[in-house]
Image (tube, rainbow, N blue to C red; front, side, top):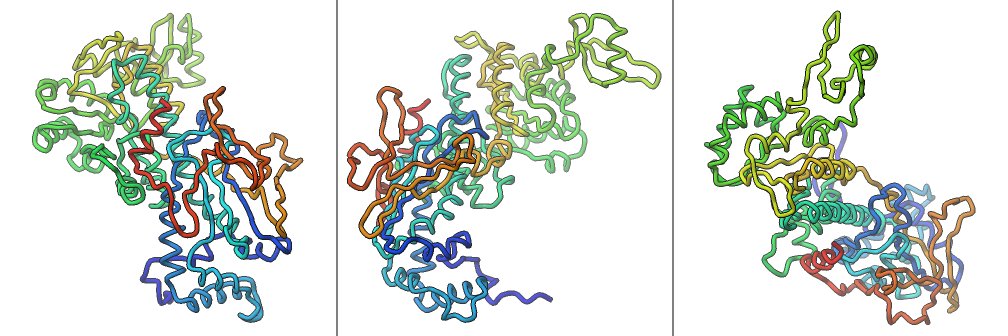
Length: 548
């Protein structure tokens, strides 16, 4: 039997001086003699892998500072006994670098930092909730005491690890909201539904609990609908709220285990849920456990009177299939088109489509052992789509824009495999069929928030300036093998200014410590162990809302 480490029963907390890539340990000795200051910049370099995100939302810096630069280092480094910290660090480095003995380990800088009692760094960042174009700096970091020049880029690993996800998710959520707002302005009387129209379903698909709430906080900057409970708690912990505004919420909802536990009589399951469990209020029922279209064409019409009498809203949730077709129906333009039966039969024999367009009508293709037949299908619910079917059953009203709005007692949410592209196609298809965009809520999960990496927006922390023997040098990276200049860094110190002509922020590099920074938007959020410019989540939300 494997023997557990004596502390395995306690939470794992890595040594604070080992929160880095291995090669960071050796960099202190590699810098030129006389190095006094290392100055580095965090920048989103490209959106080639995430083209619909045109700008980056500044978000997550306050959480990073509070969690690691304050709490983690105070708890797991500065408040620990000096010799315990040094012994732990020394033994690890000796073993992993295969050194002869502990005396071969350079740990004097670790001892000096512990004795100092705080992190001698200054970190500046864009105000959270602002949006910046690609290639505009978001953060700078430099040491404030000469002896600790090595500390700046030691933190590159931690900063990159902790920051790319909340920055990316906040930017993705804002891009979703901008598109939802566009369709809302075109097809709705107001945007009251907007904060609830994108609902975070991503927690189960994230790589860790920390990933879930870091990403989930980014979502909450733009929306209030979420099933990621820890994200709400994380916002309260790191940011707080300064009024009684809604931070995040959800509604009762079923899952497939609930539906299948009741058996295959889905009429009685629906009846039980809306009459006995939730006779009033909002409830979401997943409706594809067995036969989705049977539920739409039989169960809902059977319960129509009861649904319309409820003091609340029943939300229908499909959870499989092509979301565009399930919600909006089948677009005839996407079907194989034929003018005669013989050509249609030959095509279907070889390709096996479910539907075709034959002489301008949609037909379902029926495959028999010895022949193929075509049934007129224009009235099938699969052809119409869920939203038009709900309109046919429950009705609604035309809004002032002339678009159909379902009766307030019925609605729909789709949360399976929703991406930005699918959301856009659904909104456009609903508009073309005369339906307001407010008729649908999107559950956004792994395709929206988990299918990203640090490279999605090209985040990188790069050293751009150094001081050696009192002389400042402008540094930069510009690989000749980088044909698209994606990895080219800034040069020297940087600032961010607001450009009146373009009405957006732009970065200015090539600066020195003696340059004029009076118009710099980057502001100090951490210096020498202290936090500056703490802000509430409400204020950050309000700042971002200006960009809609």
